[in-house]
Structures are given as C-alpha cells and as structure tokens.
Length: 302
Image: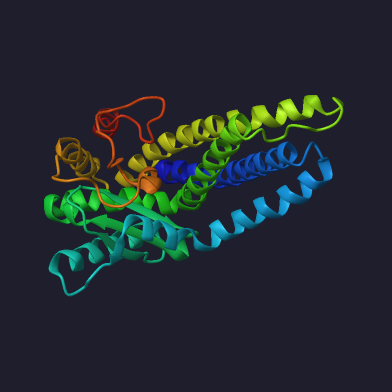
C-alpha cells in the first residue's frame, strides 16, 4: 500500500511537471519566434508580436496533432503482426502489462531493427503506442521482454509520453530556427539599418535569447528525461514485481553490438529505453539517458 501511494504521488507530481514544462517550452519557443521577428523587422515591437504569436501557437498545435504519426514515421515503425508468433507474444505481454497498470491497451508497433530497444509515445494513455524492435523480440526472453514492456507502460502511466513527444519537437525547432537566424545575422546582416538606439537593450536581449535558448531548452529537457527513466525503471519493476527482468534486459542492451546502423531517426532517440545512436555505456551532460550501469544497480537494490 505504501509503495502504491508513492507511485501515485509520483504520477501526480509528473502531471504537474508536465503542465509546467510544456508551458515553459511553449513560452520559450514563443520568445525565440518573437526575437526573430524583432531582429528582422527593424525593432518593431508590434510587428514582432503579430509575427511571433500566431507562428508559435500554430506550430505547437500542429506538433500536438501529428506528434504520434511523426514519431512512428521517423522510427519507420509498422503495426505488430498477430500472425507472427513473436509479435503475437509481444501483443500478449503488452496486454498483461496494461492490465497490471490499470490502463487501456496501447497500440503495438514493431521496428525492423537488430538493436534491442523499445519506446512509448502518444498524447494520452487512451491513445498510446508501444513500439519494440525485432532485435528485442529475438534476443530477449519473456521475463526480460516483460520488464521492458513494464518500463514503457510506466512511461504511459506516469504521463511522460506527451511531454517527451512534444518537447522533442519544440527543442528541435528552437535549435533549428536559432541556428538559421544566428548565421543570417553573421552573413546576411539581418536586423541592420534600424533607426535610433532606443531599442538597443531589447535587441541585445533578443539576440541573446536566440543564441542561448537552444542550450537552455535542451539542458532542461535532458535533466527531466534522465530523471523519468529512473522513475520508469522503478515503476516498471513494481508492475512486474520482478526488478531482475528489466535489469537483465538492460545488461543485454549494454552488451548488444548489432550489425549496421540503427534504423529510424535521431530525432526520436530520447524516447527509446536506451539511445540506439550512442553506446549504452556512454554518459555525459548531453546524454538523453542516465548511465545504464547505474540503472541496473538501482534495480538490483530494490
């Protein structure tokens, strides 16, 4: 009972944090678009606002509406095939974990990749998706696969999927737009020729925002992402009552050396249980996931 209350407390905290972070990212993106308008429209505050607000809000709404399809397309995922024995067992595992978590059954997708990996996405638990690589189906036993499915189901239960999916798109947009504007100012002379010096301070703030917003937004996102991986590990072990299953799966991910390049796009790499484009043992300030050895250690001390 105590553990259940602790999990529910984490979920409530995650819901509040989701609102805060989504609002922060939306305001940061609005600030960047406004700064671009201010720089390119010769310091005209009203034109900058008229330029910034519709574009920022429109982009966020479009990102929200097509987020799931965009992620699945970027991962080159396909619906699981019930006529395949491996994929039918996968569907059963997802169904078992959805019952254990008290959630609606997610749609099940498969990515044709030799990597051992999986991710969850969606706007809310009722419209969630779990995707697993063929490498995971081939290399993990049922205990280990159950641990991975419990981890992904925990992301859904913890309401991580919306914030992770939308924030990836917003962080990417901020980085891309800021880079374009930065080089435009250097080589194209954007914002030159405005009259007077009355708005110099606002202009400097706008330029600094364009330069530092990508770094700040990404660091904020990475810090949240790593914390949520630990929480999903813990809650996943609670669902299965077997931390060793996920620990063994993470050990196999660490020792996995698939042939060829990972499938899909680096854009959705933060969604996976382990970043397929980096060594699982690698860890730095810019890592999307916590150290895999530390994750295994925490599971085995539960």
